[in-house]
Length: 609
Image 1 (cartoon, rainbow, N blue to C red):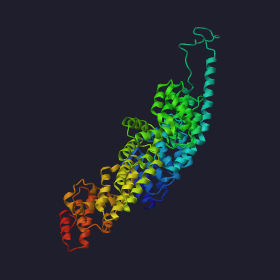
Image 2 (cartoon, one colour):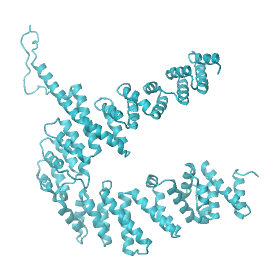
Image 3 (spheres, helix red, strand yellow):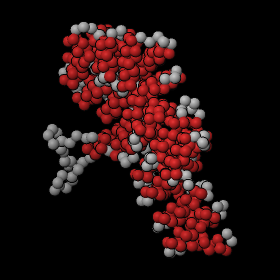
Image 4 (cartoon, rainbow, N blue to C red):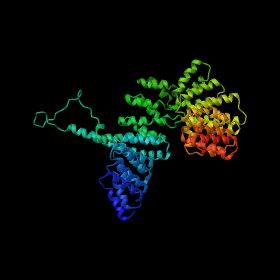
């Protein structure tokens, strides 16, 4: 672009007519890369009155690889243009460290929606300064709770690095936050006492005498947490406790127990007691005696709110044998909710011996005792691992099914140790089948164990099914292999959660082999096997090339698959179908299938006459 012409185009960026500004921005975005004047002009259009001009300017800067525009992008987040704000957030996320400083600086200012977006971007940075900046907002009346939930949401993704950073940062500042809260509480109390002692003029008087308020009815009760500074300090401290509890690190329990003590503010006690919930809920939790002991004491206390919080936390806890008697004593508590908890959790109160007795009763012949044992075991998290071992050791089908039923009551709370033992036995059954050692009893136990794994660890169950299917196919039993995986086609959520494209291709090929040449007659538009091929094609997976290397896939099956895919309403399916039929034509041009393939391609417009 000539110098004079370029300057004239840049000047048009300031023109009153929006179409000229848009045209100028479009031209400069296309040809102005590396020109500082163009860069400055486009940056100036990021706050243009017209949304189209703003978008063109932003995309031009992105195309030029512009740097140093993070503050301008952050400013976009704070405006009403949601579409442009979303694009600015994407660009900020891609800029990484270059944008982090601006994001941290602006997190505490502006509209709440923009601040939330900035917090999300900082979380993805996963750096110590970024985490600190977010935790600094926990006391903010507008953003504090949202910031906490954003952190929790990211932690749900299983990012260990982020979890370690958050734990380190939260643990380092919770002590100072507690001291700050205590200081502000003392200050608020002192201010209140000073205000109460200040003489006031009696109504209609001339001063000198204080107007005293009578004690008793009508006297106000001072609540220090209504003080804004105290409220912010309290919000920050309790949010940190909740976050530490959410991380569920056993090393945090002593801190949480200390913060749940009687001398701490009531809101802090609530937060600390709730934060203990995940730590004491682990089926094989170790070293939780001090926490459980404190919770038992609170459950029987006079403060009914604190007692209920303790009861809710104890409900899913493993009760150590040393505390079995104190826990069982809650059955005589003056608090009816504590009484109910103790009676519901009586196996926990009796320790390992009580769990063993209930498991023995569940496997016995007395129907009444079995029913009672089932109800008791369903309420005892510490019974999970003993139930697993009883199931795996059982030689009686009905007893094994009862153990399995009790285990299903703990779905979602089965420990990793218990799952590992179930999966290990399932692998033993697979190995036994491969060596010809399967018996009727072992096959039955395999089925029961498999059903339990499907309920309590569906991802592990899918992995086992694929392993079995691979072994069957290797043994030349493709039909049986597809039969092993076919139930997954009715449970897409489980399938999508654990398999990659290679596994999906394996499943699809087994389905094709199972249908055989009958795929032309049996398949429908919504056939789940065709769907797997269609999804692979849509993701760019080289289906045709991979199928060509499958030695046991016959030309007739390839033709049938291509034929059915060509009849799909999805363009990706049609293209894959055409590619499969063309492959037959290329490989065997004089065969009958090649002739049929040509006819089909001509009818569908994929081959000229």
